[in-house]
Length: 458
Ligand SMILES: *Cc1c(COP(=O)(O)O)cnc(C)c1O
Image 1 (tube, rainbow, N blue to C red):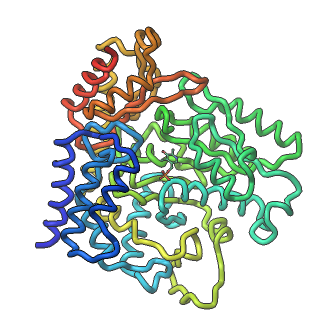
Image 2 (cartoon, rainbow, N blue to C red; image 1 turned 45 degrees about the vertical axis):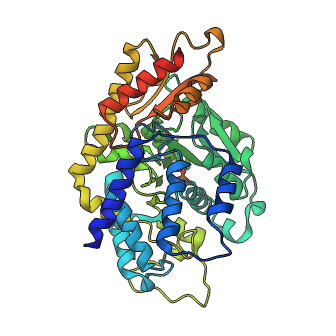
Image 3 (cartoon, helix red, strand yellow; image 1 turned 90 degrees about the horizontal axis):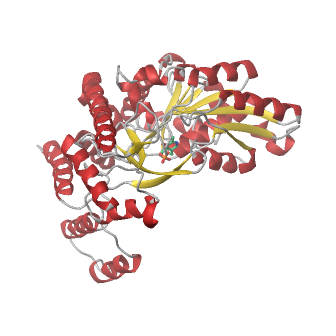
């Protein structure tokens, strides 16, 4: 049956990728020359031949993020059932701008989003949620919804009609997509207050409190605080419950950016680390990170549907009217035409079940623990503290004889044996960063990474 061949395709790619190098370097002109010679767009060729050529290129010239020794930036090894579902959805091409065009896809997504809302601790009946292109779009949606809640006239009159300057708060380790969202929303990047962090790189809520008071005293208009659950650099989880308390006391919208860390909600053992997320007004949670779904599947969940509607509602005169009890995505979110990107997520939830997903997440957490132990045993220093499988480390010999973390990362990546990256933490501390992003990573892969780093250290 053809579905087994789609599942086999995903499985074959993952298996074959695991046999090869994690990354190979290439210059842009090399690929452009190859394309000029092998993919003449002035002629036509049979589809299988073209697809084979494309696969050869993808194999040769990609950082293989599905490789079990890719320890990188939250890009997962994808679940075969989600790959198969993505291909199936592409074949039907449902248009999700309006409910009546794509009832099945729409309700499959709603089913998945209600499940995600429950995992967050939201009441699914009171949650507005939709899939986004990723965390960037979800974070922009949060900024726009928070603005429309705090300043209802902003949707008609714009920022310039406000009596002061709106400002928002984000820990110094928060994601720069929030700053870009502020820019895109017309607030400018200096509307973002980068709040200091404690020794564990978590937002310092005392500093947050002081910053809000200062801004108010100076006539600015605080409206939003963003807490991150799983920072990109170090996996830190901001003190979400304390932020929720402050947000309530100050009348600020509380957004939790759990783009990657949201995955911990699937594990009964890890979910307690995100306590307080259930008190957020909105949450960003990327299925294309720890949920191991294909790229382009973010999600935005919000307990204040009216603010979201106010931010986006448009009456066009040419779009069909919604059906009773259904919502038309183009009215309550940023995209108009859209891919049914959440259907693979629904499929993944249905195939794995709660226990399967918990096992996937906990396996990766266990590989993170193993990595910490193996590095410590080889005299590396672990320089971050998190329950999530993201390890930042350095070594007493780094800094000696011109060795620096960037050079070590380059050597490891150049060996083709693993992919890790250099990172700058908090007040400028430089370290190496390795994150368990593949559910296929084994203890042997972790040990191979440590061996590659030891060798690169020389
Ligand atoms: C990845 C990430 C983002 C950006 O999300 P995209 O899906 O890459 O657009 C934002 N915040 C955090 C914490 C992230 O990990």
